[in-house]
Image (tube, rainbow, N blue to C red; front, side, top):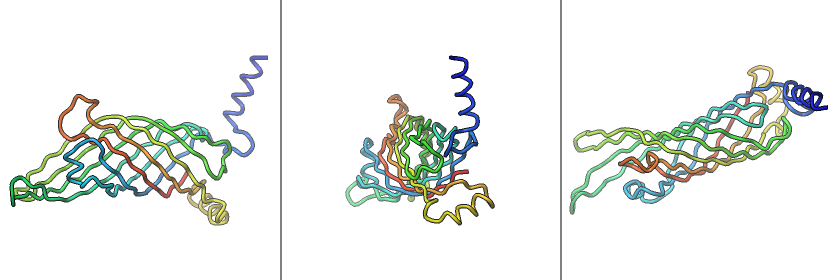
Length: 212
């Protein structure tokens, strides 16, 4: 009995079940934007005035049986501000931040064409930065490391226009088109051992995506 059960499970994993895609591996590509706020570093909070600032994201991922996968993302944040160093004296700074994340994700997806499905994930983060002081063009750059979590929802757009989605599948190998809404938090302070910027943050983002 146990042997038959194992064989049945292997068959299901190999060929899928009704309503599921037969391919074992799928790929995702999304491009989007959102809002991010630094929550720990007083210098960054002062520089960005404690506000949420625009962040632009590129995500790529690989999925196994539409259930588990690996998600990689690269973001870009730009800021320019004047920091007062003495009464009536200030320096203009430009700061560019590049949060990069690599996460293991799990999706609650039962069928291939499920219109809405949530996901969660967690992993590591490496945030790069490049700072320029306008007065003398002095630059400071580097990386900070940490960990992060993400959670979100995918909304398939296929039912809106099945004909054009069919063309995308035939011509470009795109199986699904979707909207991704994501929230997340990065804890980036070199695991409490480093000095310099603390890029710990919270963010919300939306993206337009393709699944291959």
